[in-house]
Length: 198
Length: 198
DNA sequence: TTAAAAAATACGACCGGTCGTTTTTAATGA
DNA sequence: TCATTAAAAACGACCGGTCGTATTTTTTAA
Image 1 (tube, each protein chain N blue to C red):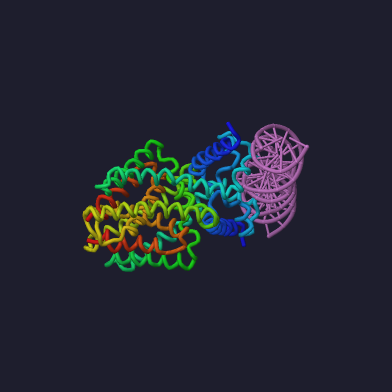
Image 2 (image 1 turned 90 degrees about the horizontal axis):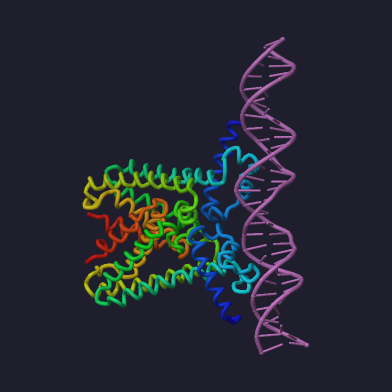
């Protein structure tokens, strides 16, 4: 493998492992060595790929949100005549996976917001942009659903997208300590089957 | 000051500082030394008061929730003919304080749930009980509001209390990284002025 | 097309400092 | 005097980050 390809590969591996460790143990609870051992990358090399643990975490955040955005995007495109249904199916899919993972971890964004959202400027900005991108997509889906007549129009799509994201985050926190998917299920039901409905 | 009184005083001081530090820097982000320096308690003494950092954190959690419970309780008793109004005023009071604190910190429970909710059994149980006590109180207030005709009766008080707590937690996280009280204000408006209303 | 020189990257031992905890010593009160 | 408790000192482990060196790649010149 060429050096450039190896660098790319190592970077990607580090980001993937970073997601797992930061999600399960938090930022300060995770040592670089743990991540490095897991992907067999020497410590010296790490600082050729990333300038610091903090910058690395900011990159991990962006790496984490990508699949969620593309998955929600796919759902919306797949059933573009029923945006609300797409959103429902997307979240139900997430719930199934959370149950498979036995409620470990929750959401990286939520955990990091609470832990370092106020102390690390770099990560704070990364969190801001990650959530903004996610929110914008959700918002466009809700606007679509409004046009299709399935969602109430006396609230802005932005307001509802924010409310859904915030409630979802809170429900994920509850899920972790209750070890039950009830909070996230209730979140989806209350909002998507009731509050948002026309 | 007698030895027993001093012990009590030191314990209390440690708990108060623990709340502040854990809230601002998280569990793993806070060293015992920081807390000890802030209250001028020698490190060796700490282990006379608490058996470990983990147990200390569990105690901090209980110490943290107490004022919130008593304040909400006071509001409910103060205006027992308007439970919904009491809940509204309670949360508005919290929002004012959050703005005064420039959105630093958010909620200790939310932050710790994300950081150590899945890794520390002791703290997980403390978080569980703290939230359960808070939820029960909120639930009784909502039930009262139902009887007074101000809140819809086709949802259980428990379901609404959970939803309010979860959304509030999520909104607090958002508030921290957006540096704005908009999320928490919207949370209260959406639920207390709309979704919960009969 | 080679060989040598230069630049860039990979690497792991090592840095000072801090972590949570334990052990040992000093002080206290009965 | 003698338990009991407070506090100081010490513990090994680990933290994020650096540094000099070894290796690889790229550039240069013949």
